Image: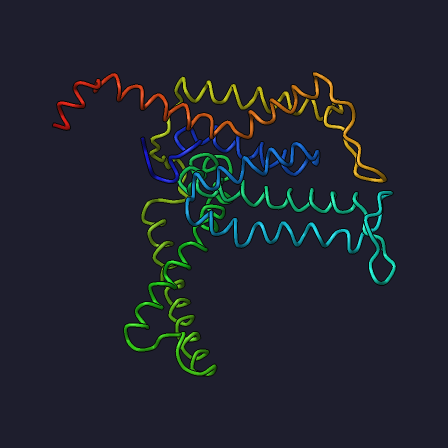
Length: 312
């Protein structure tokens, strides 16, 4: 299987399919405040980020995202005292209600889910895919988005290169007193700023030499529609449309105030939750299906006796 990060999950599909999928799940993660939907979306986004970014996502999710989730969830009941189910009273006499705690947890889960989905989007939708999708429609905006997505990773990488070079020269930023560290840090920042300005000039010259902005200019792209892309597009549109109809018809009815209420669980509501779960877990399911198909093809190509002979 292809192991590059950007080629995992939805990365092997046409950029239009990947863009539509992530736009849809990010939009629904913000609009649907139903507790079950938030739980499904958060767990799916968490798993997708781990599958795409590996150890880096694991550190970010455990040391930043989960603490932020807990802090944001606890902040709401400290300032919002609505709700009829009082858990306890603060020393000042303000009540802490179950409804305010649940709403704070839901709002924090929505924020964390959006961050996770956007990290997956940033990994799958590379700059060339964005330019391919938006280059002919809004070329200026597509260029700005592409450069913005590349800005922070390139700056971080170059800052690490400069810091390592300075460390080899005996100018480690972690040594010395406060003023010496500040002086070394300003030196690294000055070098990084000079590199950024020079890189901007080189980028502008390169774009001009390639005819950027000229009328009739064409661009080469490797992306072509296939049957796999059409099936994935149909699945995304079907699931997204079904969830949208359910949202407009009140199928995801819920309320946090004055008391928690999720409504009666009917077959229609259950189908909405199942389709939404299918939409959120679609990349993981497709990845698992590809892995299973790969193993079956390997078993057919190399039977047990053939593998034993090769190992011997």
